[in-house]
Amino acid sequence: MTQRDRIFEQEGCTFPGKTYTEVVLKPAYDEAKLHLLEPMMAIHKAQLIMLVEQGLISCEQGKKMAEAISSLDLQSIRTSNYSGQVEDLFFQIETELLHKAGDIAGNLHIGRSRNDMGITMFRLALLEKIQTTFSSLLLLQDQLLHFASEHVDTLMIGYTHTQQAQPTTLAHYILAVVDSLNRDIQRFIHAYKQCNQSPMGAAAFTTSGFNINRKRMMELLGFEGYIENSYDAIAGADYIAEVMTAVQITAISLGRFVQDLLLWSTQEFSVLRVSDPYVQTSSIMPQKRNPVSLEHIRSLLSSCVGNTQTVLTMLHNTPFGDIVDTEDDMQPYAWRSLDLLDKLCRLLACVIGTTEVNKKVLRDRAKASFATVTELADTLVRTDGLSFRTAHHIASEVVKIALTQGIGVHEVSLSLVNEAANDVIGKPLKLDEAKLQESLDPDNFVKIRSLPGGPNPDEVRRMITDRQHLYARHESWLKEAKEKSKKALRYLDAVLAEWCKIHRNC
View 1 (tube, rainbow, N blue to C red):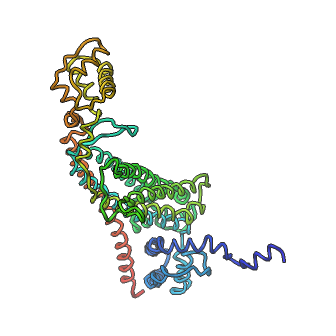
View 2 (cartoon, rainbow, N blue to C red; view 1 turned 30 degrees about the horizontal axis):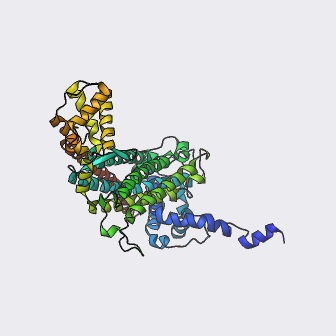
View 3 (cartoon, one colour; view 1 turned 135 degrees about the vertical axis):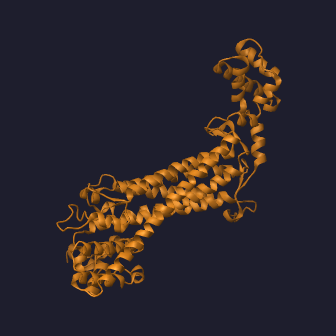
């Protein structure tokens, strides 16, 4: 027996081969029955309505096919195992419709292909999953805004290059995260709009000689528009790349934020205390309170990025046309990335909403830091008319002298500052003691930085109000998007039911 014969003996001589079934067909079927069954049924209903309206099938045929579609046991299909008797879910459904309605059920495929159907199903599934993830992004954003509102006056040190830089507030920091998340949300909205276009009617890629109505299919399925160029409709995969890019950027940005939260949760920082429901203990060290929820969020956000990168990599250097690389093998990674981001946003919202902040440690640390000396330099510009660079040199010299003498910022005196000034400009300053102490006060530092976007409490409150209005607009957008999707499905069923009622006596 040859090697070829041995393979045939093990795998079988007809489609599908045993290993091909195991590696490709069964996993694809299992994913499709969970994620694509409802979109497929919506397409069948819309196609039937359109074909009857266009006069491409008779009302009698339409009624029989409508009854067949309505009688399908979808729950049984969802729990079914791949049998190998048909290639995929599409042919599984078609086989059942042929069994129920007879040969006329084959006319449901007039003017369409698995190509335009497949892309349409992927788009419909993605739209629903984007809505779900979008909802959790808003939940996280809402929690962050509440958190910021509670910490407008929570003084803290801001860091650059991991070193103490300048005083700010916790609310100011959190609003930066909120604004980053706002940009993520805008990217999702744009990606959603790009995804919300119907490929139906493109058929294989050249449309059809039958007089089908692409615009009607778009309306029935609830899309905002249709992809005009039929080749682009089945070849273009940038719609999913854009969604994945939005997911990837969001996951990366949130991962950076979570890294800060983990650092602040250390005993050395003593800033955050993650609540009991989200910590674990050590099996050997009784004192441990491990903020593992944040660790899991960080690692799973990286997994989310990996899933999106898998999608983008699978798209890379593929032919611009119908190709499996952009379909059954790739789509599950997209679904998983959206699902993961959805869950992680909800978990992170819970952790942030219950965490405790050690305001005293943050304030004491800010008051003990030389992070205010930028304001000392600014003050010297105002009081002595020095250039900022010269004032910067004097302030830098003040810090050097203080550190050499073991003096803390609260012990810096006017004489020490004048000593530094003599070293730099050869004379004492006009600065008085009151102005000196004011310039080194972190509360004053924050208060006078009232330019748009600064940490001044009133300015931060204004920003919070603005972001709350923006949140409300995003919430309205999501509500409208969800309602439009639900309305489309309701309308689809209503039209089919009305059509069956009108043609009941055909």
